[in-house]
Image (cartoon, rainbow, N blue to C red; front, side, top):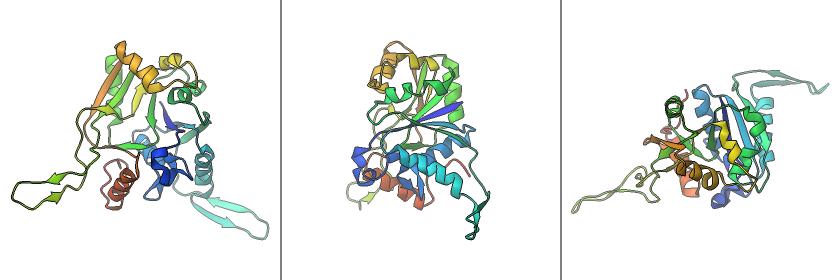
Length: 256
């Protein structure tokens, strides 16, 4: 099964990092968040990716070309300019890097990938969020209900840190944000190829024009994931993810 990753947005709310690179290339622990997302899928045996490029997409292309070229050890003969690559440990992934336009909406980007999806069920997520969701269970749930689309329903992290507070006692800050109320779309979707027929143009917004209509038609199901999920929309959220990684407490690291 192929995995589509939307990686074309500008990420304006994280302008401190995205002025010079696309948001999926912002690093956590020395690796782009895109790599973290792909590692999670690969842990479940999903290793063929279609990355929908847009804003500064050439940087994502360069990353994967350099990844192949520079991984492992090299022997360089300065006399004749030859380079021998001694292949070390390398990810066994197939990555399709597809330019989907700088201004296309999310639906438009997906629509431009139809020739690669081959009328098969596929997975879809965003290039700026991580989770420890069980993808096997997600797929099993999708196949059990027989509808067109499944989204992962997650609890939104609170915008504010929590307090461990009792009247008359010292206050302590909680180590991680409290979970917010309600449910939101956390990405990590499973889709039938018929969704492509609902995308009319580059201006189609996948969430508003496709998913919401599927919901009204009873063709959209939600898979509840009430464990770890975190997007990377702001500098505060980026710092939080980096702090978890640096402390060796990154819940989204499902691989060994």
